[in-house]
Length: 462
Image 1 (cartoon, rainbow, N blue to C red):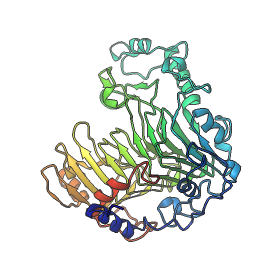
Image 2: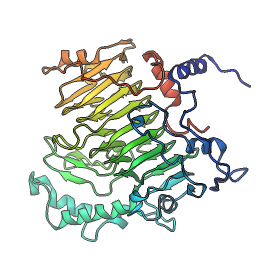
Image 3: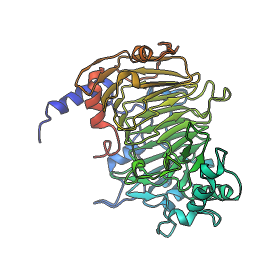
Image 4: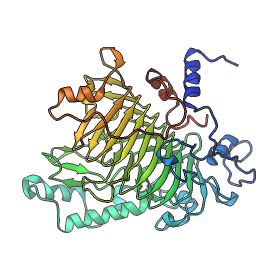
């Protein structure tokens, strides 16, 4: 057996410090009677995957561990353990009817094997955007009608906009996959969800792990002429959307745009034609969410926490923990927060260059506690660029290290750097101290090698 090198040894030491090598205390072994099968020497789910499918979120592992904790489908009966390879099989495993699956609270474990395409018909053939368009809608007609030179800066309305809305409804029925309570969705090695949204809405107790999610594209983006100084195209579909839900654990996933990056989209009405929305949005009073060991690669809008600036039902909600995630070449919302108490710790940010906007968005009544994060900056990005004030007043930043493009590495007070460069200062105390964390704190200089090696899909099952 090859002996581990110094880099591997460093990772092992770091994992021991964080408790990552310690089995989850709430995990239970899968019964040997699980009947779902996959291709392989024994025709069964690999033992390691069976164990992961039965694993619950460890105690104290972020906000999703609060109260009753998050167990997902770990209590599933053998007949509720499924392996899926198509959209139709995924819908069937989640309850059988996509329109009502979110009300299916039966404990269930769903293994994804291979590529599941949200644009796939039940017979396996693929739809395209034209197949989902309402007969009254074409993009050419939309562009001709709502060109600001013709329409002005008024919100689109009338028959063509109504046809676009009907087209969106057609796509939603096809590509938005509704997930019910007490569910674990876990990818086998190489599993990928493409062209779809996992919608976790009005449910409790969901786990999503070890999946690559890519290209949750919107066929029918909306033109919003009053969004910003020049207007913007806005898309509807996130890769994972958590709404009105609690106890959700999103772990060891990879989020990308696949072979359809935003950079390949045209410029229409003078603005980028935006066909992608968020990677993982937590909105509409959702709370008690932990996102851990995920990899976000090359995406624009990554994570929005909070629906709007309106003071109302979101107050006291939106409690989210983000730890040991890699943000690689991402541009904004890392995360952007309204109202919530959000614990952002031990993440690695490799950001900067063309299109980079900001990392931590301080929104209305937000309370971000950012600790022991490491920022590797490129393309002229500076520490004062990492925070954006979106109407908030305070942020706690502790233990931050930055590697600048000129090679300088060391600790930086991010809030002080922001305040020195901007006229309206942010209070350096967000007013709370996180308590739901596992194990000793990993020293910030160890964050890049540990997170880079272990975050993302296919790190759990090798």
